[in-house]
Image (cartoon, rainbow, N blue to C red; front, side):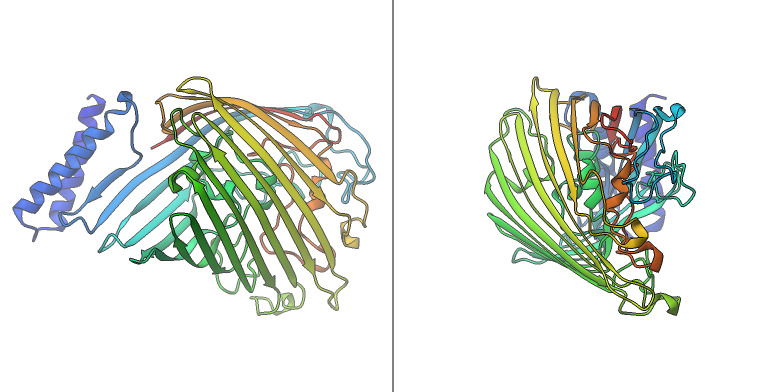
Length: 481
């Protein structure tokens, strides 16, 4: 059976099920519904013709109820190369205690992975103003597990590819007539632009290391937005940074968090903000924005009362970013700052940690389907660390990375199918990147909810090495459907 025939068969089966469940519907409405499904199924077979919209959409006869089904698959090969053993007593938590950590057999780490296998459901419920969005991932990208880890304490971070399903987004949105909207459920807080831009619309193979350190990921809460022609304001009240899939009494979420993001549009269209790449013949666009997030934890109850006086942590995260783009080119830059503070308790002293990140990246289309891109990002952390983290000496306190590569778009002006290759180079020794962990005092149990150590980060291509010059070579095929 050909691809087109299969799609018509699937569409017909869906129609039959819908007809059984909606027996009271008139024959005219059923025929209209059938026509919509058939037209959509036929459109899904025309990928080779060029631009194709993502998702299979099913609607009722009134146009007030709809469901769009789509997804994302990213299949990746990574080859990471690091230098051998060394002793660095400046590591806040040496791994192992002698300060080494990369044995001879660990110099090269290679293999395939599925960083993202997502599926989503989106649509209208009763009217075009009331919409919903549900997304899950079969390749969890935020698991705190061990990977190539000589330290049994589990200080290393791996982006798990175990195939387990994890809910990412689940929210309801209502759009008012006067440019206001409200969203409630689980979603990304409006902080970092690179994190807010979808996984399938990134320019490089993955987000920068700096963004992966600070990215807000998902939270449960309420967001109110106002969008005008030249500016946009988003405000949220939530459980805080990285608190997805938690109950209200979970110690891994803050007591409360408030977030505000403001964006200005000086030229172009708001839709151009949603991806970094700028197709040839695109109009000029310019955006400048900033965001701030403040959260506090440890002042309310948790399942274990013993935790109430321990997990007292405040966290401030802010950013300023902007992007300009035009006819086949784009440029993006961001500066990020954070302050983590854990309080003094009867169990021990707290600590402070300030850190900053920066990023600049750009791309240029050599042809209609070939894009060349490059990126530089850096990170700085001060040395105000708790005693349980090894004292106040962190060397180096600055980490820098460069990334350059190429994208080939199978269909012009479409992210549907893309082949990418890039190289990530660490300019500093990166094994002690765990120093920027937002955990104020591990010995007393104080922490910023949601925080993890920084390296290895397999999605960013950085495993962490005791010497400068770590190199990660990545190749990826992406299908956005």
